[in-house]
Image (tube, rainbow, N blue to C red; front, top):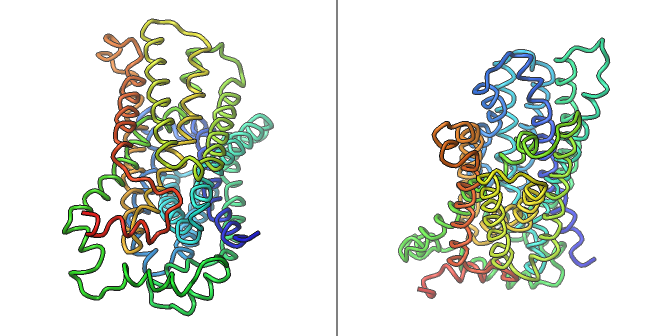
Length: 459
């Protein structure tokens, strides 16, 4: 295998998604138990679930400093250690509400750093011809993590003996996350470093040696020479960041990073994952295991969509998948809204939710951070991904927080009859679809070709 080391390292790094997905499965599956133990009202229950996201915002704030100062690999390790501290803390001290919130926040900070650092790492070690597929691993493993997390939670809760109290069980379920995080952390020590980071630090010999190992068909001397052309101009007036600012293209990069990160969440994917059982309860007959089975099916469609993206993104390109996916996302949500408004409940609504989850994950979900990472010039990559991470998690928190408010609004329900959330998310999906027309395609382009796009020569 020509790119064996790059592929293996990308798969390991991309397994950060499994850690997040597992956490989503565990936290979503036990939130009712946590709320019961602490006697939480709906507002505090939402915050207990969302404090992880708040922590992720703070973790994203430090993406640039840690990635640029310490390297992409160490950033992944640090983020995972924070996740481990958070998981252990909840397992040991989670019976006290303030400590539960603290350690969930610490775990979130670790995931925020992880999710902003992984795309930068994969972008810099992946060959252009397969960079899209390797960049989609993160979303694919997230789907797998959701399935395993929900399955583990379901099994443990349904085999709880009468002698085991509620808190012992949900703390133990959170404790299983410690094992998942430790395994991921161990594997991280075996991945290669980013040769691009070595070049950023003027460690050319180390970069060349590493490039020859992971990219055997690439002329490393020419690569280093071209890298220097765009990223090592000591004259402040000639470096690429200054050129982009002078030409107005820096604002364009920031805008793309903003709307890709924000709209991917504002279309409502995470609320549909977190609260899917409540949505399906209004459509399907309620059984003892309905919520569990629906969550598993959600995870399956999540995973299949991501797998399709992995297999096709380097063939058809980022924009093509985004065009198709965002259009289907918006249309499916709009049709759901119409049916609910007309009080026409049927299994069609369930299938449309599955279609939404599938289309989200073969397009926006799998591509957002990959695209931002490869589109950003090397000196700005960690900054762009850190900024995108902040916007992503803040948007996630905003949507998760406002969902029950919108869904239970007497005013909106009087007008839209319970369909308002789907119309709102559909509008954001359609805005996403329109904005895809404004972005450049990065399929098959080297990082240097993308840097050339941002230079003054292009306007």
